[in-house]
Length: 234
View 1 (tube, rainbow, N blue to C red):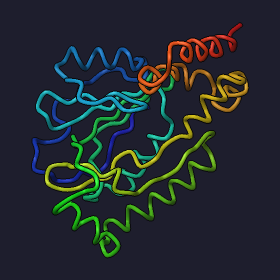
View 2 (view 1 turned 60 degrees about the vertical axis):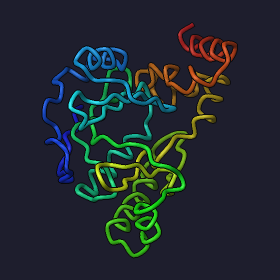
View 3 (view 1 turned 180 degrees about the horizontal axis):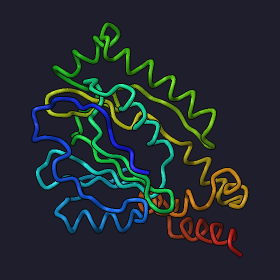
């Protein structure tokens, strides 16, 4: 399903959405999307726990390509609910991928020093009296409650300064929701069939491809996860 974004923040960058790749997202895996974007000149610019980010050739956009992360759709919902709010990045397109992955094209954001400093720190301290921030907070809490009730292994919502990034000349919140990843992957090791009764296998086909596993787990831990995963088809 393609998720076209409504509304956008008028940032001082080239027109967002110009030149977005037009690909059959629903039939492509995250692996194919990563390769396809790289072939079109998008450059890898970050690796998180759940996804890989690439920056557009003109520098105005980032693509977040993810093998599996139900929590990120909550953040997409938040950006849509508060479209145009200066505390959130503009999202141009969000689409499901084959096997339960996702790709989200959003306004490029860059890390900032933590704790936040200078002008961003002043804006952060004044957030209690900032109507736009309060709109984000209220929407974020409502979305958190919705996903907590419907998403197995839901984690939490954090609106703290660890999630502050820079978009153009303003601070934005990014990735404020997360899954309870450790609990989910422990459950895969214990009984992957039970996991698939709660999250269908076709919606998490590439769950073992998340960057965190490749970066943090030992070879023995990766092999144990793959043996556990294979038991679902034996």
